[in-house]
Length: 326
Image (cartoon, rainbow, N blue to C red; front, side, top):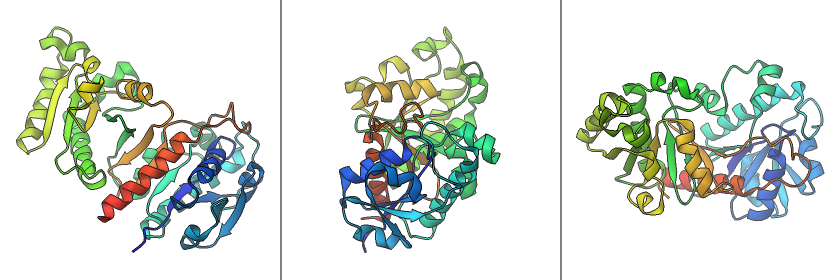
């Protein structure tokens, strides 16, 4: 059976989302079937013909130089660089529509273009910190994990959008154990790695250096890792984070788990700034996203780089095929 196409939510229409979707279609043609969900008025100025489809099954048959678009009307045209409050609810609704299409089997996966969180909060009372938490609520799951992935590295932060001063308090044994279990399961199910090797960073410099630079490694991280090793997981660490991400170190693991946001994101953005992909683990469906924001400052100028969107689409397709056993 042929895999269904990937659904792509339009994201904030005043940002670079529509542009990188069109550029991804131009680069991929029909080699990777996908369709966008959004308002034709937000895509028409971008120079690619549109094929308005009524059913995702039509997307693979659309000509290579044309964007398959599942129509979702907004309040009006978009003004590049200036999010409109009247568009906020439609942005949220497009995400939910994409989830419905994946859940009913019409789409193989959901790839989300960037949203502008403040615009959604101001215009639609959006009560979630971001895409990830909203998708978890739609799926009815209590905990999900953010993975950043590129060819050179897969890395998962245990705590995400938490002020650095609050990280030690936010880091709990249950959170760490759940993150590691979700990561382990996803590596098997979605990345075709039957026995994943997980490297775990410490929180403190030199992984605490035996307690001289902090006690979290001894009191919290090591006991969790020991417990999971007893369950059969191949977990190493806690490692000093400054020695984990050079080439020979990366060869020794399949995924790294870091304790906080920048500890995870600095290495991947250094290794592949343009090609990183944000993947949400722990959902019952596949979701990927470009690893960048709405870039309002360059919206409408034709300067947006589609590399991360192309990588996100490719990863969504590959994960869907792996999960389906193809």
